[in-house]
Amino acid sequence: MSSVIACELPPPLPADGSEPDLRQYQDAGTIRRLLTSARTVAVVGLSPKELRASYFVGFYLQRNGYRVVPVNPREQEILGETCYPSVAAIEEPVDIVNVFRAPAAVPGIVEECAGRAKAIWLQYGVIHPEAAERARALGIEVIMDRCMKVEHARHLGRLHWLGFTTRRITARRG
Amino acid sequence: MSEKEVGAETREFGFATRAVHAGARPEPTTGARATPIFQTTSYVFEDPEAAAAYFNLQEYGNTYSRIMNPTVAAFEERIANLEGGVGAVAFASGLAAQAGAFFTALQPGDHVVASRALYGGTLTQIKHLERKLGFRVTFVDPDDPGHWREAVRPETRLFFGETIGNPGGNVLDIESVAEIAHRQGVPLMVDSTFATPYLCRPLEWGADIVVHSTTKFIGGHGNSIGGVVVESGRFPWDNGKFPGIADPSPAYHGLAFQATFGEYGFLMKLRAETLRDLGACMSPFNAFLFGLGAETLPLRMERHTANALEIATFLTGRPEVETVAHPGLPGSRYAPLVAKYLPRGAGSVFSFDLKGGRRAGARFIRELNLFSHLANVGDAKSLVIHPASTTHRQLDDEELRGAGISPGTIRLSVGIEDPRDLIWDLTRGLEAAAAPGSEDDEAPTGEAMACPL
Image 1 (cartoon, chains in turn purple, yellow):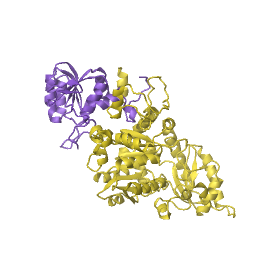
Image 2: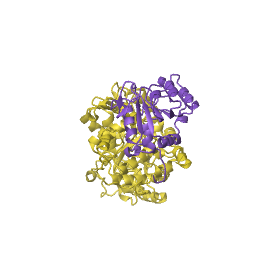
Image 3: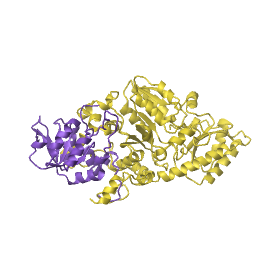
Image 4: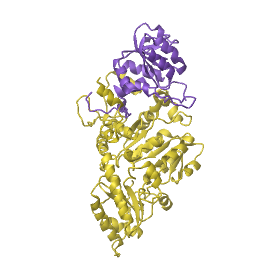
């Protein structure tokens, strides 16, 4: 498995062999509501390298009308936006904190989200059920093990333009 | 957004509903309910930045209809949905789809383990590609999973079989063969043309890639040539054996498809590189017809399979018939596999051997009135052919035997007509086949129908 946390990599199995039930963090209705209502998305672990999955996602979100706030302590500016060293350092309200970090970093990010963000969105492979429970206790909505770019393209965008399965079945015009 | 729509996002819709709706939402600009035929080569970019994003694969965008087209995409999504795949890429034919999958997965020096009961055109294609592209193939008797295991080499990179063999009716033990493939770190590709996703969904049994000739049951009306590749999105193409998919691509500034696109990596590679380079794209008009065909796939397959089983049963009781190779018949050696993989029916293409061999076969075909004598299967109309002189003509005797064919084998593709009319037609053919011979009915040599299919 690549060391890069990819946009769409399936999750690794936990060491004890059990498979955590992540469906409660992947509800399509919640995903759609968050994507529709959010304006500002902080991307934690956004890489300045154009070929990285995090850059693909940040670039895509920016092009699709979201304000992207990069969080990367090693960079000054990515995608034309000022980089912040941490979520705590962000000086504006954030709707969604989108995480491209190793699972071990998630509990700390959750604490920083308290009072700052409405939702935390953990990318594919970023799995931490305990941190997710803590986030919910803090009143923060959680999406886990889903790619924000893919879900946007599935519900509001053009995933189907390349023959990918959206699972969207509707006779409504829109 | 209303709660009703939220409900639709999470509902598990049934197969027949998805056959009609998947991929075909109302067209947003015009409200057109039928999927429009987007008969265009190319698409105006919103601005230069959009163009760059599309060509860099950073945004899902239309560029050129060799690589993507909205009508084709609607059809691709429908088949991907029905098969349970993460996506699909359509091709100009079933053989083009297979070639595309080979081209994407394999490199020179790689080794493939393939069923020797594959469709004749597929066997011929593989043998040509083996020479031209420098990979190696071992053909195995597909019926025993042990044969697949024994054929594996260190450089093996792909297993390839058919859900239902053509025309021998072999049923593949998909789950067992997939398990053997995965133990070697290689994917199982299955041609599921004869089963269609209505009868069997190989991805649910562990297969990784499904290919179809959509020309057959999916289109269902014998009017268009096409093919499709569906992928599960589950295979670890970055396991070290597939540098062609996992390594940085020079064609996209070093983009690593698997690391960047994850579960979509193989299909992005298949579309953005293989389809782009081989150019064998499906036409929008054909995609429209295939999408239309797919809407009635469940209804047609019910009728196809019921008719075929009735006719196979009828043939087993006829004195003119030596053997009937329909895997759904009681006593078939494939009965346990049919029960497991094909509970809704074992398809509608099967073969039988007439007593009297090649000569009886010619008389039989000549007498038929409803069955069309042609080189295709999976039409709403019933079809008949003599494989040894047509579809499998390129094979030598040993290869014919490997594919389960004798000189007197007749292959039927049973349509959706009234079964009693089909039985009436076949009865006349059987009586003619067994009638005392005259000298004017020499068997056809096949020269006049040297069909490359």
